Length: 386
Image (cartoon, rainbow, N blue to C red; front, side):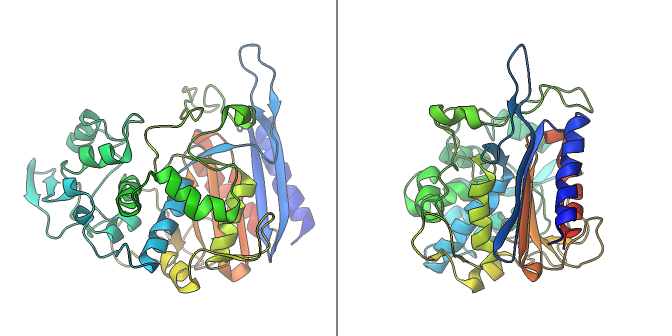
C-alpha cells in the first residue's frame, strides 16, 4: 500500500482529536495477508473531574455494539452447516412466543395476521417485521412498556417479551434494522442449550484466540477500556455507553460485545479467508470455522428488490446475513468495490472487508455522535492508500 497515504490516514484522525471531535481512536488496515497499519491516536479516557487522561493504546478495549452481529450470524451459519439450524424454519419453532404474530397497521390502528411466519433467515437479514423502536409511536411505546432490550432481561426473557408484540411490517416485505439479531441470540441458546457467551467463546473466540472479546471486561483489565467524552462535542448532549464492568444478564447478540482491534482482526481475517484463518499468533495451523461457500452465502446480498426502511442502510448497499453488502462500485458516497461488506457499532466503531482487494480495515472509537462521519471518512482514507 501507499505509505504516505497511510500516514495521512493517521494524521486525519489526529486532526480530529486535536479539534475535539474524537477523544481518540485505533485504526487497523490489513492487506494481502499482512497488517500494514495498526495505530492509536488521542486518549483512551479523556480527562474528567480531576482524573488523569489515559493515552489511547493499540490494545485498548472498546464497546463494539452492533459489530457483535456478524459474529453471532457466523455462529448461525456454523449451525446451519451442521444441519442443526435451518434458515427456512419459523422462529416460533425455537421460540414459542413468536407463534401467531400479527402486524400493526398504522393507518387503521388495527392488527392483521401475518401472511407467513418470520423465519431464521428473516432474523439474519432484518426482514422479520421487528424494530429497534427508537422513534415515537404505538409500536415503539409497546416495546418500551414491555422493556424490550432491558439489560436486566436474559435472551429468553427478551424473546418472551418481544414475541407477542405486533410487527411493524409483514415478514419478508421490508428491511428494517431491528432487535432481530438479539432474537437470533435467543434461538442460538435454544439450539445449543447454553448461554450465548459460552457459545461464542467455544465456537469463535477460543478457536481464533480472541482473548479480549466478551460481554464484559474482567476487573483487572478495566484500565484498558476506552471511554467517550462526557458530552457530544457537536450537540452538547450527554453521552452514556453500556456498563461492561460485570457480566450482564442480557448477552446481546445484536450489540453487547467488547473487543480490541487485534481481536476483531482475527475474526475479519477468518471472514476474508472465506471461513479459514491462517497465521494467527497462538494457534496451531489454520483455523477453519466454516466453508468458503457458506461465507460467500453469508456475505451475498439477501434483499434483492425488498425495500428498506430508514437511512441506516446506504444507497448502493443490500444486506446479507449480519452485514451490509455493497451491490455496486458506484451509487453511494463512500469508496468501495462491489461485493465489499461492512458494519458498524453505535459507540463509534466500523469495519469493512473487500475480498476483491484482499483487504479489511477498521476504526474503533467511543464517539457515538461521530459514527456516520467515521463510516464516510474511513473508507475514503483506506482506499486512497491502494
